[in-house]
Image 1 (spheres, rainbow, N blue to C red):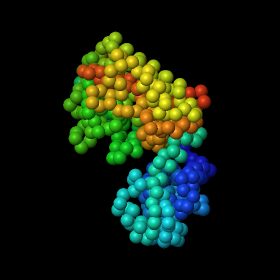
Image 2: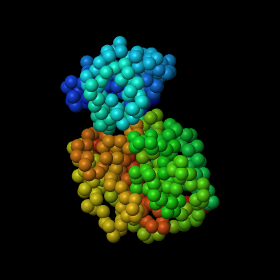
Image 3: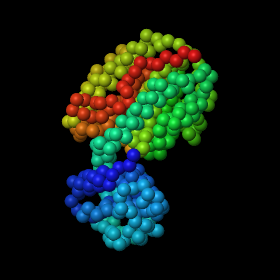
Image 4: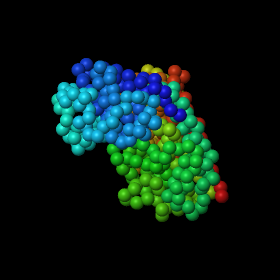
Length: 396
């Protein structure tokens, strides 16, 4: 799938309007983040996307301009050897500029300032995230397909991969091969600083409760200290293990998020069922509230007030590892705006996409609960990933 030129022009116009709403005196915006390049141009090259207050724009590419022209339906793509080549478009002095300050390094900024004087630099990151939060029909079509493949992976494929004695790392590798076969685009992107995954988090038994630097309810042991994801080579699957699989699945640039639980070689206990079903009930209640005009912080408070602490004593984590959110926006990255949490007080807009993930840790058992991806509609959240399901029992 490829977006038409008008789709990309609509995104550029939306960003332009949002920047102007923030400041009436800005001169230019310099975007160096490659994911922003992809959003605005449908190609991801090394260079700078420049947008001016008068509406003119250009994507200045160091390499590869030829590839960029093959991939993008835009014609405003230009060669760039150094940032000096921007001067004919921007001039050598911009009083007020917007930049993606979360990803632009000091080194890149200083190289750009060598040629262009910038009196004031304003962050564009929050503005971009709010524009990107509302998905177009084209984007939703891609996410629909991601959700379909995602459900197939977790509900139909993963149960066939589980074998006694396999390691968490082996399960990750086998999952990855099958994901690529289904249509997965190869990695899972996060906006969280220096966070990267090729699949997601998974764990056997209570390894899903392991402490982690990742800001999520679950954890995993990791393949080594340098790569704290993927899963452990040492933790082997045993009969009676709860298997936790939380995967951000990407298709053609866009992600969905889903969690599925399995019990290997045994029958779920009454406590497992009670905790898991309580989480599913909370997810469904939260999904019903995903309507235009609803306020994320109020949804969070409503659901948190409904949590039965006698059933879910370790809601959204385990001892010492709780997180203070219930869900998150998702799209080009897994962790996008808005967040279902305190402090997010701007109302939801139709066609935002949000992953809801009520989960609860059970000591010596693992993390239980559900996660699915929903589109905000006037009727409430419309699920893209098939909806929550029972713990899948795998007996081999």
